Every structure is written in C-alpha cells, then in structure tokens.
Image (cartoon, rainbow, N blue to C red; front, side):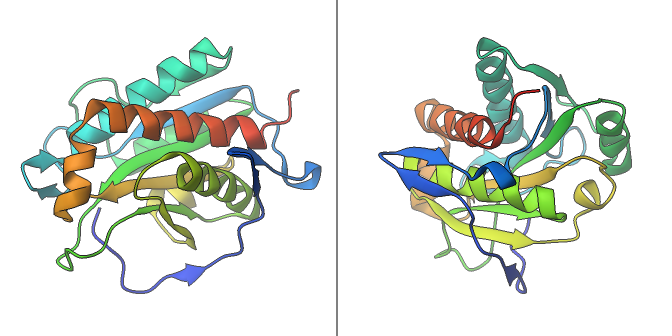
Length: 206
C-alpha cells in the first residue's frame, strides 16, 4: 500500500509496562473471533520493492497471526488463504458475517521516499481506534523498526466493516534496511506475535 501524504494523528490510549501492553477497561473490546485479512493477492501484488512482493508478505504474516491466535483459544476467519484476488467489498462482506469479531487487515508499505520506515496502524471508528492503539503499542515494544503511530483513514475495508477494524502496515519495504528485516521469517514472526499481543491486550472476554 502506498504511503499517504496526509494523515490525521490520534492519541494512543494504551500504556506499556515492562514490555506488556495494557489498556483501560473503558477501552477494551469484547470479541471471540478475529477476521484476518491478508492484503492484496492474485493479480494485485501490492507494493514491490527490493525483491519483495507485498501480497506474499501479507499472507505469510496473516497465517502466523492465525496460528498464534488459535493456540490461545481464539477463533479466526481468513479472507484469503492462498494467492487469490479478493475484492475489497467482498473482504468486508466476509467479515460482516462473523459475529463477535474484530477485523485486522495486514499490509506492507512502500514509498518513493525510501528513507521512511516503521509500522503504521489505521482506524476509522472509535472502537477501531482503541484496537489500533493497542496494536501500535505492541509493535513498538516488540518489533525492530517500531511504529510511526496510529492514523485515521478512509480505506474501503475500514469503511465497510461493521466491527472494530484496523489496517496494519507492517513496515516499508521500500526502505532497504527495513526490507531486509521483512525478508526474514523471524522478523515476520515477531510482527505476528506483536499483533496477537495487542489483540489480547484490548480484549475483554465475553
């Protein structure tokens, strides 16, 4: 996904203590299922930089997130499991059929300004903002390269989903140093673990 020149910064409501992420009870969410959306796919490769193709990285991290969530007893739904093209509206429709859920769309970024690096988390709704805050803090505390923060955005998958939803940019593959990290499976596992940690931090059990 290409870098946006205009963004609206938002306050992060989560706190980090000893490497763990905590959120206040008022900002917690009830959900039993995570809808995991691996960005792009099929004919839509996404960003291509430094020998990396975004759609492949997205699916790899999404699978890792799914595995880690299932190991912790949460249910998951994937919008795609293979290198297939899924329309953005169809991704939202898949998510909207899932009760008691949150939606996490996974991407990697690219920009002609190749000096830019770091993860980003986008939200649309108030509850999406709570989720974005927790995920951003978790990535910042656990992953090399950290995060640039959380941002309000009108991405289609955020506008058309009815549950708390976020879009996570896991890093800029246009930045050579960050591309090297993203090419490493161990780094992608850390990204997945950070996403899972943020989800668990904001979750209030039903």
